[in-house]
Length: 457
Image (cartoon, rainbow, N blue to C red; front, top):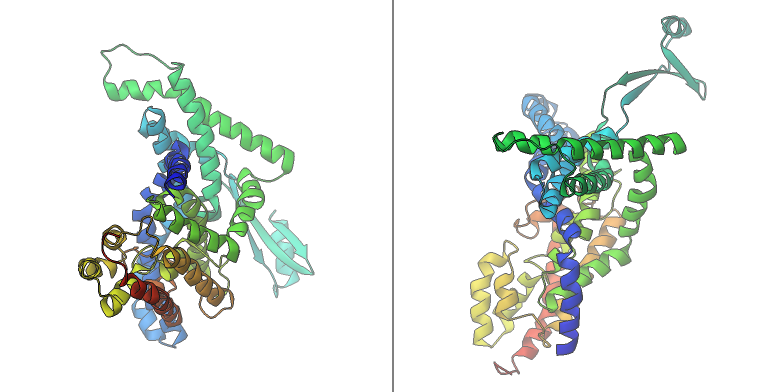
């Protein structure tokens, strides 16, 4: 066990400390303030607009319209431009990693990303039921009229517009790729001193700006040339190409029950060997499942319905249904210890951990028992989250509960987290609490078995 632990920690340590993966993880973490603000705006509109509308409370909705509109502004300025924010954060973190000007790194990254986006926006409006003379008059005015299945549509194109589907969650992978390309070019040229050098008498702020001119211009040109060649060769914008052939397949693979269960198990396995499972696997969990969460949020904001949410499992799904009290569903362990444990040291740890466990902070119980390399509790520690994930996944896939589509602070108590993350779905809260009960049933026999082991053995 000692040799296995040493080897496992060596491998996982390398994964968890890989600089580029750390930069990705930190960039997603940096976006939490705006992600939460956007999620709060959508959640408020669920209770102020969507639920009252379904209940026929039109008067209440009309009275709340100013607040609903303000929440719409907040959403537009947060989740609506998620890819732009991420692009800056990634460029900043990569610049810090490469020890070059972080502010310039962030600005160059976001400029390089925007340079790859489609530069025009086409809006199509169906003219079904419109008199043919009106359609002909529109043609005479030089407007574009297209016909499909006998229905005419008016197409209006505008240059200089950025569609939210590129600036929002769908554009995250493009922002990731362009951020790496631009940051690599910028850092490489800066480190080779291919810069404009000014006298020492020049103020530092001005000097930093001039140093970044040549590397920054080269970085933006590099992504622009790639975007141009991509469109010339494939006929698709770079963002569309990445979304169709990289982002969607990767996220599709992440949606299988096997993938979800495996990741849940690996988080627990890393913890068992004393490593922070969520930090080690953060680039995967955040890089794939946060875009899914944000895309679900965007679809709900557009449709006001959970019927067409594209992704079954998102980043918040793990926390809502398989992390009650923290990794290992340790809130259930605390309850089992209170009821069945005869070991005073376990009871003492449980008493100290209970208040924090209610808010999903489980370091006191994890390291107080401890769980690291603990043979007594190894089995429940490793299997409970995958079991809970399976129950919630099947409930979601079957339509019993909607997918998680709102970001909620991870310290939100069990049950309430699932309720808020699914837009006020009571059944989701019940599934979360049911999982807590299942975890309690699994923890209980091991807590009873632990009574037979003396402290220190």
